[in-house]
Image (cartoon, rainbow, N blue to C red):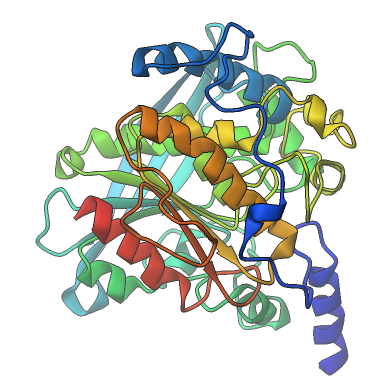
Length: 421
């Protein structure tokens, strides 16, 4: 048994998702260059944005630049229809919550051309007796029956990587943390938060070959060029479709909705929130390259490395900037700035240098002027280690590596309490 486990650890350590290392991220980023171009510099070269109204005028150009160079064109339209809602357990967690199973038909629309409806399965946990509870809208690595252990939840055909008690599922927890599969549900319910969770791989598989057919369907009506959407854009778009059905439910009509994602789904959470102003905040944990970490002056995973490992994640144009990142007209601080003035949590780990925590912090510094322009505080820390859950840009770093550990969820919940309770 030792040799298979060791082999799998080596595989995980060398994968494009995460590199295990003994290196530590520096906590003082002052030696690294600032984010460029400045976030308030107009992309057309017409000067500096100096008012909230002028910033609103600038946002479409930033979105377009991110679509053309990084993510691909987001569907300008979409529909979500609740097909079925079923109560799985009205006394879940010994009466702390209600657990429901939702089937949702989602459709993308480009230039008036609609994709074929796809089935999105979402599990919803609601704190008992609470109306308008804030909703943590989660994209998860595991399927719903793993996120919410309950035999009554619908279970797609085939085994997922989180199923069973075998070596792979065990290594998932060992390498990627205690909460990679199931979050601390009891604590979340006691703190008064609902969860709506789904596995985006059921719509766009996280596999280069299998993803293409789903992406072609979502991109129906678009030219076959370097700006066709990748999986990150599609997964970000799914956050909006989940918001469609949540907002249509009277129990959530007054609820704040906070997108949540780890690693690749942290990238998607940032994209979904930046493009959909109905989402009230975001928790992006270890989102790295193509997420919150800068592309320019890069440390950790490079544009070339991520696009070779995951060619289906991004627009084809993104790979063309490998080795010439300085030519990018925008960088990831622009993505963060599109979310202003809403609260943003950026989670990191000292030994997750592959995700470049200091590059993420510099991106937060680069985005901060937009929060200030809009009358908010933005980032309120000088170094990576001075976590402030009440700040509008809340940067958190802990010891350890890439994953979701016991230290992460208390920080997530403190941030949520500060902004949404």
